[in-house]
Amino acid sequence: MEINPMEIILKYLPLLIPIALLQFGLMIAALVDVIRREKTKGPKWVWIIVVVFINLFGPIVYFIFGRDE
Amino acid sequence: MNSVKIEDLRKKYGNVNALDGLNIQVDSGSVFGFLGPNGAGKTTTLRILAGLAQADSGSIFFGSENTSKSGTDQKARLGYLPEEPAFYGWMSPREYLDYVGKIFKLEAKERQLRVDQLLEKSGLKEAAKRRIAGFSRGMRQRLGIAQALMNHPSLLLLDEPVSALDPAGRKEVLEMIEGLSSECTVIMSSHILADVERVCDTVGIINKGKLITQAKKQDLLDRYAIPALEITTSNGSASLMPEWKLRLEKLPAITGVTVEGYRFHLAVKDVHTSQQEVMQDALHHNVTFEKLEVVKPSLEDIFMQLTGSLK
Amino acid sequence: MNFITAFNKEFLEQRRTRKFLIALVVLVLFGMTSPLMAKMTPQIMTMVPGGEAFVGMIPEPTINDAVAQYIKNIIQFGVLLALVFTMGSITIEKDKGTAAMILSKPMPRGSFLLAKFTSLALTFIIAVVIAGVAAYYYTYFLFGQMNILNWITLNGLIVLYILVYIAITLLYSTLTRTQYVAIGLSFGTLIFLGILGSLPGFGINLPDALISNASLLMSGYPVTNWTGLWVSLGIIVVSITTAWLVFRKQEL
Image (cartoon, rainbow over all chains, first blue to last red; front, side, top):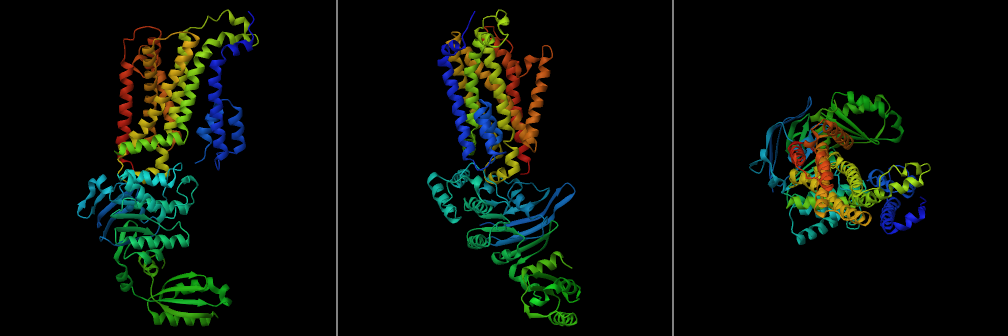
């Protein structure tokens, strides 16, 4: 049984797109927040990397622990 | 307006008697200055009045009502400013004041009017839409005063209202407090005597949770009307000053010495003897001064005498 | 009414501080990915080096696998977020002095506390509802029809389970001085109830029974013992009442 990964992705594409969009949206929201905030807990550039490169959990961890009120 | 009577108020924190049978009478419409060294019980008293802490025993009367069962009724007429006012950083001052207005159940129109008025009064109009999180200490203090005035309180409790402000802001706020005396009874605590002296008509001095004395400011000044000496030394004596201060403190006719720059302020028992003593001492030790004058006592001198924080 | 005033402030705070957004996005994402992962597990195995050997051993995934994934993920992340969002709700306000500012005004402490609970509850209700709709759609697309009434019940039970932990954490947040102690105690309770639930025959009386009942329901078995439901409601009521009784007397 030979399954091509591309085939799977194409097959489920309509289901994958909303997921990707949501993750992307959350990342953008977090990114905008990091950049506009005066100060964060820990260096800003670290948070930017975390938010952009760690899927889903990067933005969540930032929102919960990274913001300094 | 509302008079306040505090009877035999006691409060213990662990082994420390924060309040040890405090009795105070604040007349309706007066501006009451609450003086005392740090830890004297000023903040505790204000917090009990604001309903944030409970006394172990004793009673408080607002007007003629005993408020051992203090409810929301009393709180609706109260304005309270803690020493370090804290806000929700994500709100703007306009939103915060609006929220406070809602808590006091002001109608939408009236509320908006009042919020605008208070923003104007506290000089925060420009910053009305900014997040409070980025505010300076002085801005927070002014917002704190604004929120305390939202409901046109009949009793206003201010804990160190001006100590965080710069001289200009301090002057402004003190003038505001002076202007309020026609609308409400004010109790303000402070350790800055000059501020109390300036705006308050009645002064209560407490130490270690007890009232030491309470009187109209003028009566107090008259009663303890021992004049003081003020000496301005000349530049040349700068190096001799610390020594001289120590010697002055030991002179029998002098009860207290404070130094401010080149100026010595001496609380004295008797003007003549003290003058002689001071001049003799100066002669013996080659201290020169430019000016020696007899001045009226300030609240500070009385405070020093009463709390015994000096000799 | 003062409760409404406080509630509006709390809910606005959750939207401003992005708590609402986080709960919504996280739960909805798991609502979408759970059925998808259930469906794709065998195919994913073939992509993992050496995984081909197991392909034959994995049975063809069913609707029950999708539901099980959904329940597990939503509960895990729902409870985690609920603890994190609730841990500081009272401690921070006491510590910073914001509570003293508001509670020296005619705002009853009960309203203040209840507004915290209800606004957090609303956040998670909305998040679970939307996650439930998304998961239903995905499951339908990948596996086929589910009983809608059972699905609604299942999501209701999940919400209730999350509310139990919001109430417990709110109580701890009232009792303790720092949010980290509060969340520590909440995790402790979570583990304690887990151990208690593993005692034979006892689990049915605990909030965890909400979850097992939900799975039973979805697999088409009748649920006869609802003790866990009443116990959960009881825990919520007792936690909030205790929090109120303590908070009423607390010095701010």
